[in-house]
Length: 72
Image (cartoon, rainbow, N blue to C red; front, side, top):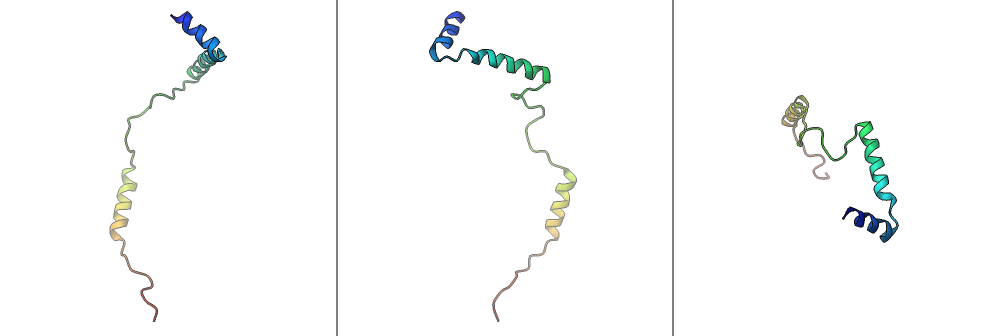
């Protein structure tokens, strides 16, 4: 089955270098320790708690004053 698949790949579109190139790229990425398919940390938001609290306090102190109201 694998032989038939490989022959189809070679004869169908002339892309017989694609599997070889793919394997070479995977090997080089493994040497460098790169893995683009997995996340290294848990998904979700990362929030700096002190910055979040400071922003919340600044928002509470804000006093809205309308600018120019009407022409005299």
